[in-house]
Length: 354
Image (tube, rainbow, N blue to C red):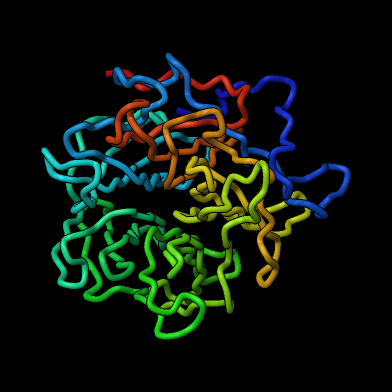
């Protein structure tokens, strides 16, 4: 199924909601805004396989959450994707941590089949029975799956995306010194950089109980070094309309390129306000060493009471999907994975059928 069949409305949605997004007349003065958000939830008829919009993944038995969606062939004109999800055993409660990572597929980029398979379980001592929050990337035709265990971030590799072999120890554990000394890194987001090497963004909970986002770099994806003498993205300043002043976490990085060929980085993240409202935020930067500039308002969840978190974004030609874990219903704490789309005027190709 080809993204070329996606039809977009003639007029673009105003994107003033993100301070880092571009004014076309300014060239590279600001970050490009195409497909960055805001995202609207998928509507009735835009999901197949009898899924009820906006829930692209809804499993009340394994409590699937924390999606990592990977383009199977790396071709932005085709929609087939694989998803990796944190999961529990049948009968677990939403408060219990995930103990496995399951794999599912979607032929249309967003409607995931209910039949999933376990690809990783918590088997290592350092994981302490917990494994989840996956981040999947393609490396030389293989799938690398970073994940959160109880004491750090692990890595597993697979040649086919199904059978994975784990590294014996976490590739990033609690720091011995520095601004996040002693804090266990969680919820990794990993991206391959245009000039080689990898960047990892991760969530830590500081001594004050506030979540912030750290950054690490690696030449080979296995040995990581923290960068910076403070968070890559800290909670925003408190204010009348603040949406992330109480926490920033669960980062998901996306590398892009401007019309002039300049590389930039977008960072989607889970935002929490002082009032306890959860939404998805967006920050961006052009160059390493520059601070991230955050959007003035969320890109997803502003009008929702279901508390979206753990974003994952996948970009196709002409359309971008966002996946976020949120409450299945207003009065339920059980998770489901909602899907959103940008631009809001996108008319999607037919959904996958049973």
